Image (cartoon, rainbow, N blue to C red):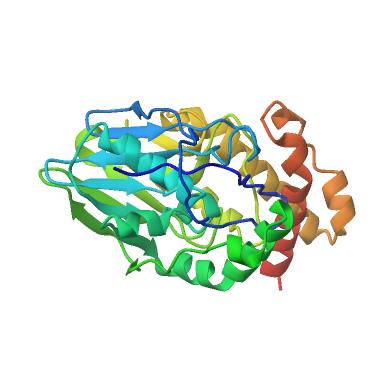
Length: 321
């Protein structure tokens, strides 16, 4: 029986900054109730569909989508949560649906909410799968993630544990068999972070995209986001036809449902900042003249719109050199 821990940790992440908080805490005892029961999305796929606000004391870091896929012989988990406590709850919920071994845990990218529960799944026998570029970013940014969580939660270094590096590093597309159910892990290149994986479940006509797609909330552009390739990746998703997408944030839907909150926003940023660089407009003027009002109804708009504009300008400025 897996003991659940007390929760006295709040994961506070400021997406306007590149140094996003990440940690795995030491589990203690008692129930924490971070996660609701997962929703059955298709025949083989279950998902936790998170709220859209940022991480806070009330949601205890649960504000993203995570999923698991159940085959005849094994289970694959897609993203492992913010904390060890959250990952332990994921396993507890999974065990209410199946006793099959959790063979794979796939990190769709290197954001903290995608991989900080890795060690819990590793200790339960799962291979931790990540792209090489994601693994590199995890290693390079780990100490900064630790210091950020120490500062924001007023913790000591002994309170903050980063997971070990993923033990199954991939650099190209791969297929994993869960027993009569193949799942396909496809590399989409840089987008929100330097490496984005998607997970396809062909039998269910379903794809888990991670932070390639957003709905209901404003997407976040980071210092190492690649806006050009993000747009290309969105176009690549059209090749899969009439399938259901589980985004990184927001409700599942068909690709058209993500046209406005993801593609249209990136198109706006792309067009404006390209023009600003070509006309040698300075950073502040480029930010001030960017009209994002069509997206102000999205959750986190006030929090992210300014930093998105700033990082986008710097992205195109660097690419013009």
